[in-house]
Image (tube, rainbow, N blue to C red; front, side, top):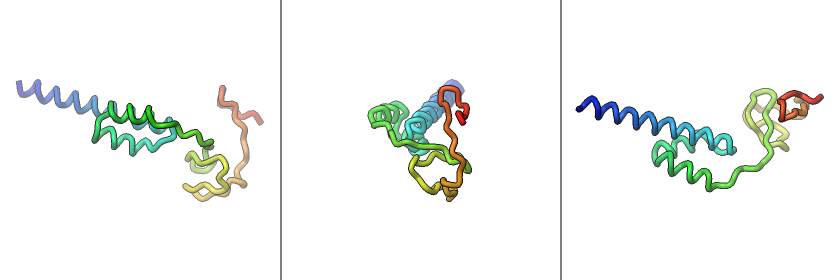
Length: 104
């Protein structure tokens, strides 16, 4: 009986953690802080957190990946805030998003 209870607690905790990770991943894909949403989901509830996330507007700012550190930065940024590289020195590539291949 005690073993069944501990197994149930383990399964519920594992499901809670996996659902919280899914909330964090969804937040990251919506240009939100995935880590903060993960923490919110762990401490509040994954269901409540995903409902709050879906209700919040999507961040529609254009972002590009820095060529040096691969972090997403604002499209108009002149210097990467993460690694400090000057974006004017970066080679400009146009990417076909359907296939992920450079056009030039």
